[in-house]
Structures are given as C-alpha cells and as structure tokens.
Length: 89
Image (cartoon, rainbow, N blue to C red):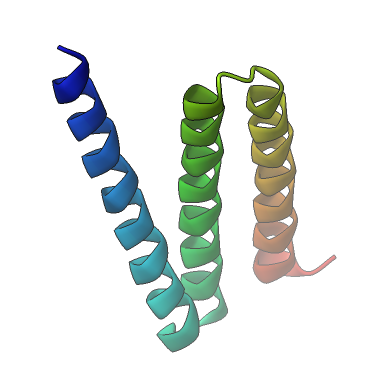
C-alpha cells in the first residue's frame, strides 16, 4: 500500500512541476499584463502545493504555516494588481 501512495505522490509532484513550467512559459509569452498576472498566480498556487508536499515528506507542520502565509500574500498581491489594472491605485 505504501508503494502505491509514494507512486501517486511522485506523479502528483511531477505534474505540479510541469504546471510551474507551463505557467512560467505563459508568464514570459503572455501578451498582456493580465495574462502574466494569471500565470504568476498559477505559479504561486503550484508553489504552495510544492511547499505542502515538502511538509508531508519532511513530516514538519511548520511548513504548512509557511504555505498559508505565502497563499495570503499571493492573494493580496493579486488583489492589488487587479485593482491597479482596473482603475489605477
């Protein structure tokens, strides 16, 4: 049973790395600022997932707090950029 769990966790980790790579490509190629912001948000979500995977593998709960703070800061950043793009600050 543990072998299947590790296989699934490894597959999910590689899928997350592919998502980060594809989001980075969209971040570089994105024709508009909104496209780049969505790609950056997708990278931060994938980054939060990677931090959670590290917390599970390292058996450390403190990394979950780091992921939560990173998520909150990412959310505030997206709100600030969206407000700037909509009408300026």
